[in-house]
Image (tube, rainbow, N blue to C red; front, top):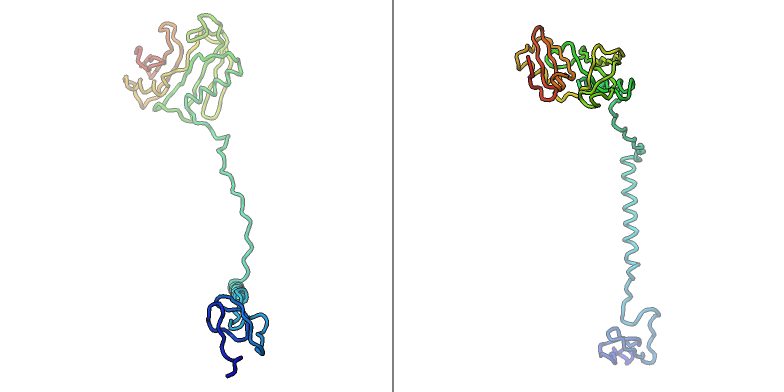
Length: 255
């Protein structure tokens, strides 16, 4: 073996290195090749294998992933076909509002409100004079029941509150479940202002039944201000039987 073929040692760290010169792969110390040595090819250090770059090693993986994804998409399209067009969402319909024309429940309070509106058209100062029903069955109103409301115009005598005098002209409003009949007429006798009854008509009926009147027979009731008793009262009639009740408490005043 000639001297140029003998292995050389790195002058820096002493590990065996190529005789062609270059840079130590361990510590990086350069050294010169002996005369006549064949220089290494450009781009690679002697004794060091060229390593593939990371980009070169990843390129096949990326390409393979793209191919697999495209292949899977094609298989799904072939199997399932194109996606059907999405129908536009229909706007939800708002809930139907209650009809304004629905009939209000027919009771004495609603009937009084209806009659009072008619009376205010007749005269804006109209005041309640009385309430009457010819027949009340089982203490309840039905579609055939008729409530009659009397109104007058205050004169100012004895004040404008309960017991105040009403003028000679009066108004009667007959209210049924679905109709209202208005009649203007002169009053038969002097009338006075009656407050709205705190003792409801149905409560007055029950008090009369509790006092001995028959629940299964029709009962006539009339409400108004009594000048003798100085209060508003209910007067009940059933055949020959009579009852007078306080318009506020429903207490029996007389029989």
